[in-house]
Length: 165
Length: 139
Image (cartoon, rainbow over all chains, first blue to last red; front, side, top):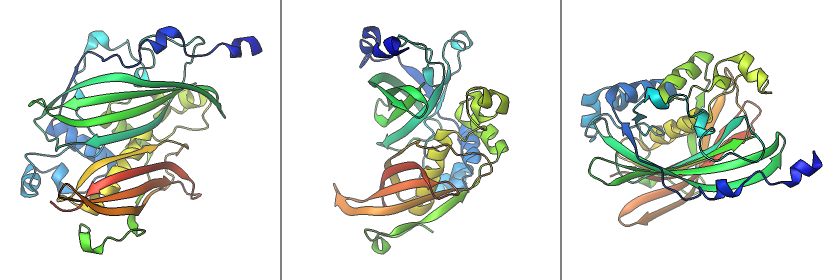
């Protein structure tokens, strides 16, 4: 056990993936999903449900509620590949880590995102860190995703942290 | 009613937003967010991973903080950036209170901006999701 713990969780193959840009993913921003997302949070502002209210408030259509950045187009062929937060993707740590917790979310907004927009997102692994906590050995994985709209403008940048243990 | 620029002062508290997510809300969120990890709705699965109960999605708590900011600034203002860390578990049917304090009020590139420290608290008053935000006030 002691010997095994001396071997870092992070492998060279994992480090080689830092900064490598993913292939783009299409996220569709549509009214139905905005309404569902807003409802699931408990938003009460009509701009998230009623297009006339949204337009009266100066938006092109229903705006994205905070935290919603479009819905990826589901591909059945890729469905089994990724676990929560992509934990099964790419190079794996020197010892298996089968559990995952969300460590944090940060979003920077550079322009409005509204229903009808089609976003193209590319992600990259921004950082890897290993540490020990109350839940044992932890691998902290930081991913950064850049979202461009249909006009090629960067509208949002999100940073997500996953804790694998 | 959205907050006005003139009434904002550094150090002031933002009106809190109290949430109390039910298990039903977690299922709704799973559909809304596309996060179907079973620790958020299947208790046997959650306990099998060492948790004491199903837990509230971190991203839902982040979205609650977004609602809290949106309700404060209204539709003329904009959230420029916000985020939080997930430092503690929250459980369904527990109250989760979004709170915030203005740390800086300033103008930059013609925009009226406010930096905030924001967080969500569990019923014991522990900050389970400390975070930060920058918002624009007015157009």
